[in-house]
Amino acid sequence: MILVTGGAGFIGSNFVLDWFAQSDEAVINLDNLTYAGNLENLAALKGDPRHIFVQGDIGDASVVAKLLAEYRPRAVVNFAAESHVDRSIHGPEDFIQTNIVGTFHLLEAVRAYWSGLVDAEKSGFRFLHVSTDEVYGSLAKDEPAFSETHRYEPNSPYSASKAASDHLVRAYHHTYGLPVLTTNCSNNYGPYHFPEKLIPLMIVNALAGKPLPVYGDGQQIRDWLYVKDHCSAIRSVLEKGRLGEVYNVGGWNEKANLDIVHTVCALLDELSSRVDGKSYREQIAFVTDRPGHDRRYAIDARKIERELGWKPAETFETGIRKTVRWYLENQDWVSHVQSGDYRNWVEKNYAERAR
Ligand code: NAD
Ligand code: TYD
Image (cartoon, rainbow, N blue to C red; front, top):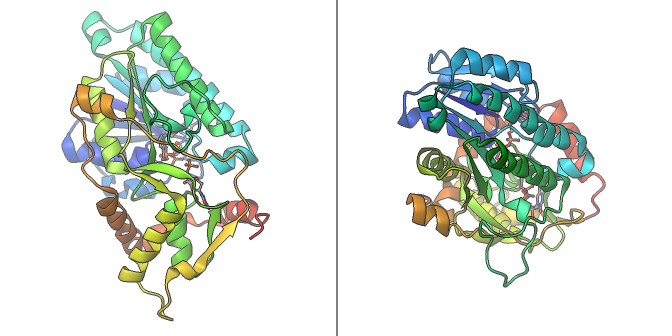
């Protein structure tokens, strides 16, 4: 079996669902269910003996040690993290605790477990750390996309904390020989994406008749990958990745934020038009920019394509259509995640942004 951390969040839950669509190998899912963790994402697995959910913190070394000793997984895939840049600006401490200190405790528990394995199990064991392209900082318009050797230049408390965790993972390989793999992926989108992030926020606000808040001039560029393609990349790296290596994962889909918002509006106009017949574009509102906002991310995914034969299955056009449809068909999920806590966040992040 494998141990997945953060498997009740956006990417982690997609990964667990996708894993069982391909394999019967059991998954222990360790997640402490922060605001971003949601067991409803895993409702399809209710009663499925292959899925063992444990509510707990990756920073709690005794819980992790107990799980490792009891279930003896052949691999750990670490998704658990605080993941939202704007939240890291309002309150960086949780990011330092989970992404840095938590990853450190997780690595320590895994190292102790791995050291005690017999040789065959030891050499087959893998620790896969899921990270982000944001550790590389921001690109100018005509600079080449991030390769795995690009210098680390994180600019937000979120990306700095992820960068620190990447360095710890690297150090545990070089110093202790822990068999690690790291993936640095671009922006994901798809089902179960918490509506604090750009794409789901725009869909949810549009349907609720609320403003669509575009930061600054909306010309910041992100490189978008459908979440299932990220999951398949992680499976490829886990299966065939070279030990100690880093693999950048991306969909060759660079888009300006404003273009993303226009695409979402056009799809909603087609699939669920406004009662007044006007376009959802009317709801776009330019608001005060994010402090320290990175201008452009772009991933050079040639290494994972060349070495592991991985390629994304979705284009942006097919992936975004599936995503908008999913939100239209799962409005109960949306209303359940819009709890009091969610409303407090929206108030905190947007109330002070001038139009
Ligand atoms: P998310 O915020 O949706 O989910 C994070 C999950 O981790 C939640 O279920 C949460 O409850 C859990 N968690 C948080 N702190 C924990 C702790 N201390 N112990 C145990 N569980 C904890 O995030 P996501 O978007 O699914 O991202 C998953 C991983 O992928 C993160 O490491 C993130 O940095 C990375 N990543 C995300 C993106 C993206 O576009 N979302 C892109 C590249 C990399
Ligand atoms: P986000 O989904 O928060 O991901 P990240 O910051 O990790 O890339 O934001 C994606 C882009 O969208 C980013 O450039 C910030 C911008 N954005 C807005 O313009 N308005 C919003 O309300 C949000 C949440 C993001």
